[in-house]
Length: 261
Image (cartoon, rainbow, N blue to C red; front, side, top):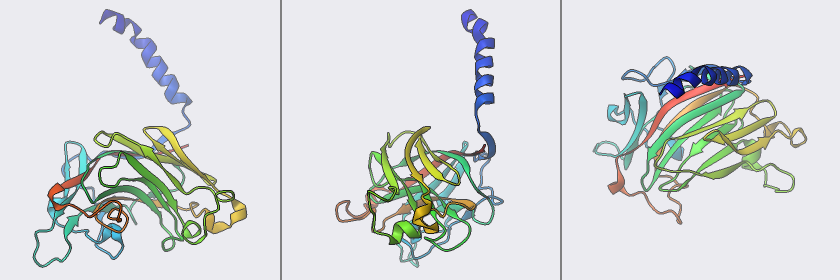
């Protein structure tokens, strides 16, 4: 203990120097303190036709804020007047919080299940999908030991991919699926670089010669945190159907941090 105390000034000086030399400054954070969602930042996702939101519900059982984390839950539907097989929850910051360029980091974990599709992602404020752009910081399927990180745009959705001329829109990264992991990206006017646990995992550059639709990421983006069950992707023939015996399951978020240079 004495040896550690004698070195404490040096440790503190080193940390201070590291902070001073970092180009990033904290811009905004969400720590999910208290016992309810901050409605000045978040709204619940309403049910819609797309696969990622077709089981969304405002059932109060599906969202829990406690002990400094947020849990978005997925359960088997027990409501006779609702035809959805499952009920799930999501939050969006649309119209309440957005940012343009910087670094975002989200610490999260999930309880895996067959058919579970938790995701942390962002959409452009202006325009309709896919023209507004989509930045998927993390998508996880079933019991996979990997996550998907992907960019979507009018270009990626409608232009046949040419591996020699077009940047790859995304990649997968191995994770410990039962542990806390930190997902994010560093983003500016010319490039989006995804990260997992602080390490770069995939980079997507702007290519002006490919036209404006190739990089619609030059506007403010808002956040979406979603816990979904089922859909064409997660229930593809090679992955199989959702298994009701595996639920409830959830996406748990510890904190979100946005930094600016």
